[in-house]
Image (tube, rainbow, N blue to C red; front, top):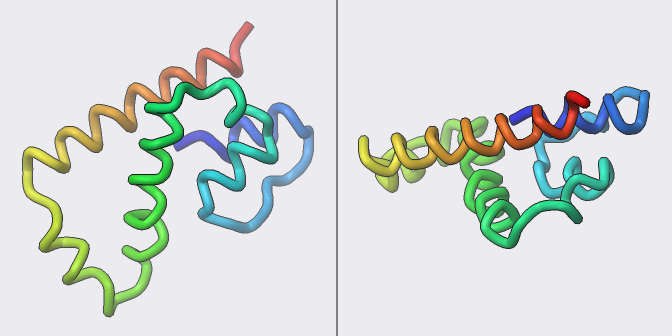
Length: 90
């Protein structure tokens, strides 16, 4: 979602080896500029991001998603990426 890119841009160092979006956002400082809706969206994304990597959780996650929900998540992700990128470019 470009949290790592923002972290690298701000800190001028490699981002931590993590998929924890909240941690990356906090450590880069962008978290404190986010709206409550954006922070809530990170909370929604995080379990999908981490748990999807483990085969035992994939079935549970897949059953919680339908086309409408996936389109909504994708749309909000694109909005968040655009917002983060706007913070990277002067």
